[in-house]
Amino acid sequence: MTKVHERPVEPFSDVHCEHGEVRATLLHDPTVEGLDMAIYLDGSGSMTDEYEYKKKWSGIVNWFLGKNTEFLPNVVEPQVRWILEYLATKDRNGLLRVAYWATGHRQSIEVIGELKGMDVETYKFPGPSSFGSSTNLEPAIRDFVSYMRDQARNGARQGCAVFITDGVIHDAEEVTKYCAEVVREMKNGKLPRLNFILVGVGSGVDEEQMEELCHVEYPGFGHLWCHRVAEEINQVAELVAVLVDETMTVASGGIVYDDKGKVLARYEARLPAILEFQVPEGCKSFTLEINGQKYTQPLPEDDDDDDHH
Image (tube, rainbow, N blue to C red; front, side, top):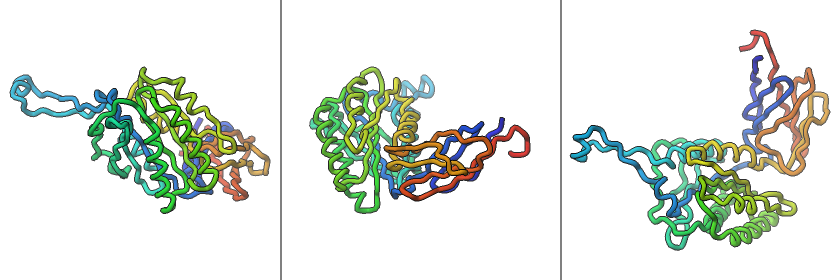
């Protein structure tokens, strides 16, 4: 059983086919140019330990003398670097807005900047200059919305922000009200399409609260949020990647046909970033139609012989 790859054509970045099961990943939205990504890291006081750099001592004598002291990366840093590198592959210019949220006594935000995904190994994430006493999410959402207004003037057509938290959100009511306002602005054409991803870490997260926020469905729009909970911080990066792939709105909908014109799959509300469907035996290609525009992708062949490598 060998999976043979066919060169993907735009807008596909990867196509797998095995025993009639097709999995096609979209490289980008073929109808919408420009996705801007952002990540907001929890800066509340409960995260203090996660941002702490632990000392690594080399030798008992040096320990007494305080020499040759090394610092290990904190547990957040490797995860954030991995996420940034991944999100940069989705972002229109490879620059990602990164900020701490729930910081300071006013629970506001502390912007780190727009970071290049290719430079991840040089970035440090020691935590905010002032940790917050509560976890207020609305200021972070407002920051991203404001950022996207600016980016829309420079070519951005959609935005996706990832918010990471380890606790209960203290302004859930304000968040819900503001999100309704954001959806109204999107439907009126004042904002590009936005999606929010909420990732909880650890036992302090109120998953029921997250579900209430994320399950709100807006008429004519669908869901604004999606969420998932990781038990530990070292599971966050992979979880974010899965959520971005699964939930990022790539287009308003589409139809997949086989090479004879038969409908294989129909996406009414939105087109996911990863398409999965079955093709009939002998099918050589499939076609994705979006808003009347068609993209035909040759299929890789199933081959149990050694003819293909």
